[in-house]
Length: 249
Image (tube, rainbow, N blue to C red; front, side, top):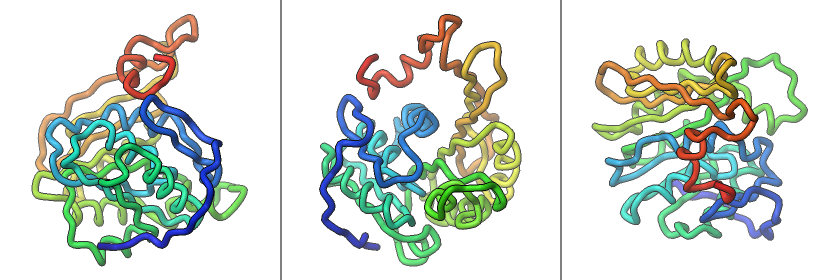
């Protein structure tokens, strides 16, 4: 197994408290956000009995959400390159109710794929999507946001190699970028199964796409989620989707 270098750092109470776990994110450039929360709540895990892989885990949020939603037989690996985010995700795992079935691997996806023999029934990722050239305040934030360290081509290639025979992959991206991603995914052997567009309000264009891919071509199911209603309160659909996690739902 690819092991994660570890270090002992006190857990700071700077993060986000969910119903069943806490995510510290003070050392992560990308904080807990709605994109990952939606992906973690929406992704179908009804037939997952083996292993899950979280690529670019950050604080470990996606992995923790999926641990909550799956049985004790499911093992979860998470890969994170950043030197600050990786130990923080490992701490978050160790403090959770599912520590015994979660493992953080502090390395690049390319290195992990070259060393592991594991195959995964579900791969999840909230991947970088900015091209190099966008201004970023520091190198760590750039790694999390830019595709220069992990291009979509590289992500799709290694995800395909790491998938089990019936493997699936769940991804969240901006809607405009998701169009090209779906086409690229098909060329890499990933076919769209489910697609949900996310809009902040009903009268606004969707800004995010939640996508579930499989290894066989099918007619994809499409849906739309509106986060807030006319009064600016969270919509019933959003509450229903995330009520297992948010404290105030």
